[in-house]
Amino acid sequence: MKVTRAALPFLPFCERLLPGRLAGLSLALLKATALEIAILAGHLLLYPSGITQERRAPVPALPADGAAQLPTEAKPPVLLLHGFIDNRSVFVLLRRSLAQHGRQQIESLNYSPLTCDIRAAAERLGRHIEELCERTGADRVDVVGHSLGGLIARYYVQRLGGDTRVRTLVTLGTPHSGTRVAPFADAHPIVRQMRPGSPVLEELASPAPDCRTHFVSFWSDLDHVMDPLETACIDHPDLTVQNVRVTGIGHLALPVHPAVANGIRQVLDTAHAGEPSAGHTGGLTVA
Image (cartoon, rainbow, N blue to C red; front, side, top):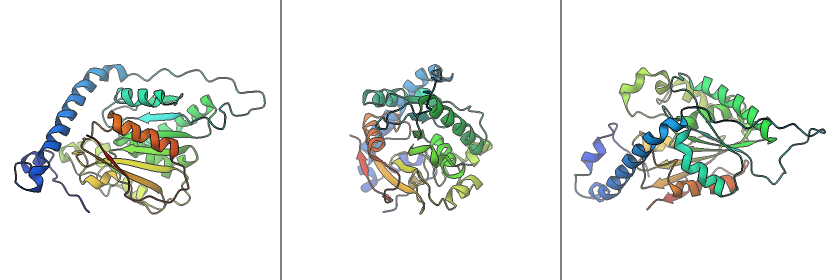
């Protein structure tokens, strides 16, 4: 079933005044909006703590025989990539959740809010992943990207050969086919690249044969940054994809909600490249 929504972010609030099915969604919308406001307030407090890059552990010396340092059964490192005009502080709760469930190597990468090109950001991501693999001895990593971060990571995987390094890419509220929200923001070049039909998105829609990365996209039915909502789903014939619908929360809640964190942990522990494409499947209900 196709889900449609208004282009203006405030119009859904007015629609909830109407009788019938739309009025029945008012409680869920109010709860999600209240949660978004609370998350935004908390994130503003945490934001200064994430402005600088986190300190990296020094690269340990390789064994004399050059063997990999991680045992084959070890879980790969996880790299977290934030969204537009944000920083690594958005992942405080997700990072804690992953660490509590066995992920020993978790890192966040900041990119500048002045970044004007998804391609350039993807190249920088690639350099960091190479350094991370060298430092940890891992052959491949898992990446979790929120919003624009997911698009940067996808470009790296599909267009810059990153599928040899990224085992699983999890995206949270990422405009894979472009979003029409907030047209006044088009003054920023990277926002224009997130519009439907942009050259960057056309590149991502081009063939990607033999891509080894497993893609899992979490999308929310109350995400007012995604217009249309299904833009946060990945639809590509060459990619191994699972699209997971999240019910009851908005855009800002995706990287911090415990139910989503649990879903991310599950896909990182079970997803493997080469599985049949799952299409628009899966579901996660947030009470």
